[in-house]
Amino acid sequence: MAKPRIKIPKKVAAGDVITIKTLVSHKMESGQRKDKEGKVIPRKIINKFSCEFNGASVFSCDIDPAVAANPYFEFKAKVEEAGTFKFTWVDDDGNVIEAEKEVALS
Amino acid sequence: MNLSRRTFLTASAGATAAAFLGSSQAFATLEDLNKALSEFTGGAEPGEGPLTLTTPEIAENGNSVPVSVLVESPMTEDDHVQSVMILAEGNPLPDVATFHFSAMSGEAKASTRMRLAKTQNVVAVAKMSNGDFYKVSNNVKVTIGGCGG
Image (cartoon, rainbow over all chains, first blue to last red; front, side):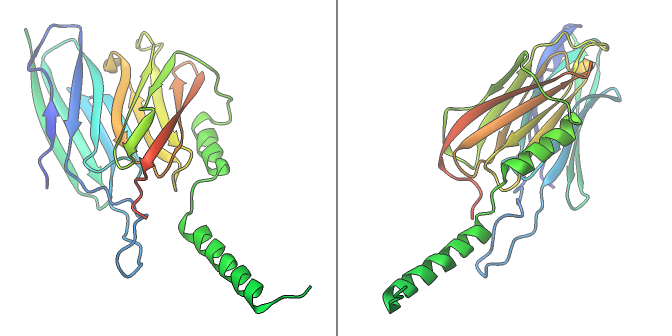
């Protein structure tokens, strides 16, 4: 499985709203395209992305085939304490890509 | 009516072409869009509000069009933006993505990249924690469509 790329500050001041950017390599086959024989290529996309901080949900997204290949998300999070951000991507085939990032208070 | 061989051939070719286009270019209808919209709002009529949808005026490549939403809100437990749904009127399927925020988001702002099949309106609908809905729509001109058909 592809390794996701995540951009997040390592150190933040308590109460700061930070920007998190994530990208994961995925073809996001829409289920609309046809192969050379004219058969529809079956849909295979990442259908759910979520971000948790110390176990509490921060941001999540339900994804439809209209999201571009290599799905990219940029969102905000308010950090009050040091902890771990956990990122999860769920594929149509049931595979789950996970990543974690630590954030310390400065 | 005097139907000559030539007019008959042209007419039938036209009919075949129309049938073919009808089957392969299955774009979402306004009905599909409204259905997705009312499922999200539960039938409530969305009004105007502090919701901003940022899209390029002209997208050269429909395969990857940046889209960004921002809702002004204090983002507290009692008063925050629950979700924002993005819809594309002219795609084969109108749904693009639905963002879910929480009080821990700090700010209801999110961006992604989407596919657009052709020039069309992109719609964003925000659901607030107090049950209000806001809606905004932007037109995006697409030079090369992004559905690989």
